[in-house]
View 1 (cartoon, protein in one colour):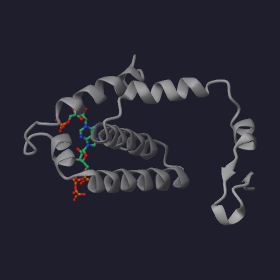
View 2 (cartoon, helix red, strand yellow):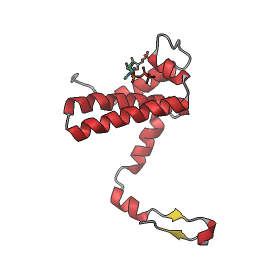
View 3 (tube, helix red, strand yellow):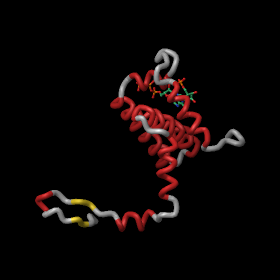
View 4 (spheres, protein in one colour):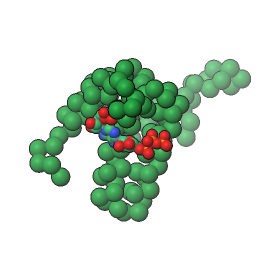
Length: 124
Ligand SMILES: N=c1c2ncn([C@@H]3O[C@H](COP(=O)(O)OP(=O)(O)OP(=O)(O)O)[C@@H](O)[C@H]3O)c2ncn1[C@@H]1O[C@H](COP(=O)(O)O)[C@@H](O)[C@H]1O
């Protein structure tokens, strides 16, 4: 692993992918992917996510690291396609800091359709 590597690489990568929006698809993989549209971008993200979970379940640590990088790259392409800035996701993660996932889930409620009399109830 490169010494000094930090998550700041994600912001740099997001900026690079942003800069590729109007680049030549024959020289930039990001430009090629972005030119193929949202459905293809989402499909590629899904494929990479599945490859990642396969390596996780196989216990292949090095392959999991490589596949995780693929997932993050394709996630960033999906954000750029959707007009989402990386800092907006960091802000959402920061907002959740210190909120227990268990407590958040317990407080979650779901609105049922009209046929259920508009009751607000928690789905188990
Ligand atoms: N991190 C990545 C990265 N990870 C994976 N990939 C590419 O993603 C592609 C995945 O290959 P696949 O065969 O699965 O996908 P595909 O070629 O679309 O094939 P199909 O599914 O359509 O058949 C490969 O070409 C990988 O090289 C990446 N391409 C680029 N980056 C980063 O993005 C930056 C900008 O890249 P360009 O946009 O190519 O300049 C680079 O400097 C890197 O930092």
